Length: 188
Image (tube, rainbow, N blue to C red; front, side, top):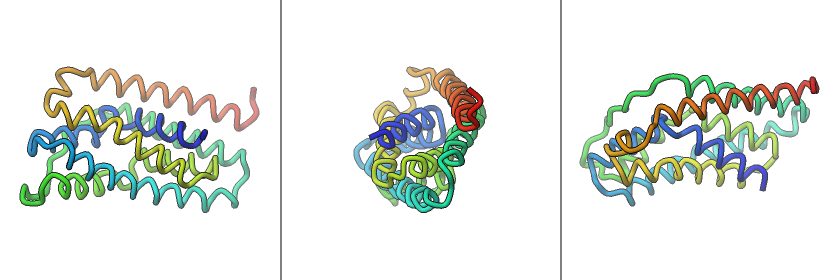
């Protein structure tokens, strides 16, 4: 259960104000059909989460628990630094003929490959040796952050302080990275 909750919170926070949420908002403006957009996001997020979780579980047996904790700390540090970078709304590079489901799937699959959420999922799956719970939690977290964007579209940026949320999450990730690293090195 720890892997499920950790992956859900990490992915959900990491995606607020990030390119996934901004891309979903752009797709919502183009298609005005949240359900197929969210279905495409869910499929892309699930595939990415499964790839990351499989890698994490494979690594688990080859490194010590201390090294796994440091890996989690490193992924939190990466997420924190990435969260401090200003994001612009990505351009949708697929034809409108693709439809909302396929456009969301293709765009998110390409945009999110190697993203901080995938790295967080990898480290959480490795730390807890839990493929399915880490993948399910990360997928649910991405969806939780995508729902407001799919429903509100361009109103998201007007109604929600995305920059403030992204910066707060980045600072939280950096703080957690420090705490995890200190505990992993047994400095406290």
